[in-house]
Length: 346
Image (tube, rainbow, N blue to C red; front, side, top):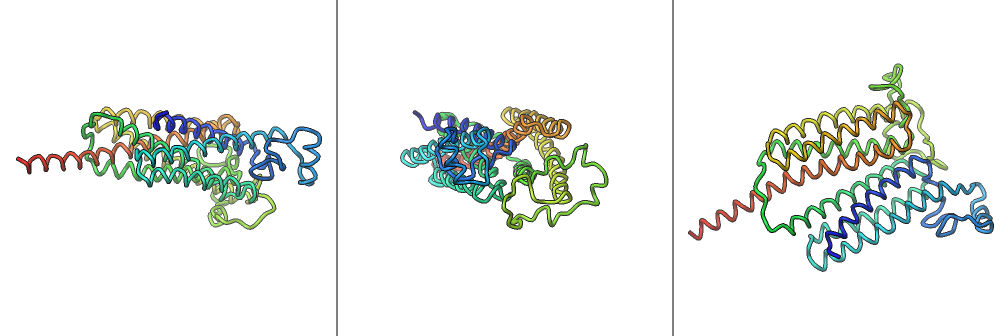
């Protein structure tokens, strides 16, 4: 199998793992199995009478909930498979030198750290900073695999694409937009891990005198006081409401930045950039609609998971924009260098 095909498979698998992770978290199944990497001391969910008896003896204060435990274990099975695929990509890429050592090793390092975060998510009983880190780790792996795919695609091209832009202002806008989107994803993870998604039930900001309840120091205290469990949240209303409101203002900022970027890309009149511009606007509209749906419909599971996946896709499209812009710069520099060498020979 060609390396690029393996990378494409890993991208599909990562998307599934991100979806399963979001579903598991939003279905309150993050502690469906109280141990790691097994489940109540088994490699599968205990369902026989003697297995359940053993589980209850190991964890007498817990009740085996098979549906939640299976959600957790299925997520782990897929994540473990993804880890093996990523390790294979790293080894093949290093042996064949199709990728830089830094990129080939980075994806494996992220997978290892993701496994640790998955373990800590369970052992630290859904501590918000760990849950948010696990979400960001999944998005980071998705992004690195996307870059890997684009680089392998470029290696297979026999032609050199023409320069499409040398606009430093556009590159700056794309870079800032990428940072804003990453920040908003982190805010979304913090909102979810602190169970703050239903704190505001009206649009556009929040119900009642929400300003009077703002509590930024408590809301963004990353290392929270030790608790027996962080499941269902430990913050008071004011802190959770502050997190939710901040996420909504973040959504407004993302909307402005992505719209501005899409406009500038369209104005460049380059075909590749116009395609990306349309993709950005479509994904932005979908994300806004899903966000509104979460509020109006009181966070239905399907819509909430779709909103999570939409954030991943928006991130990849903005990342693709940055990649194309800096690829243009790289190609421009290479072309200029070749031109100077040719003239020197003359």
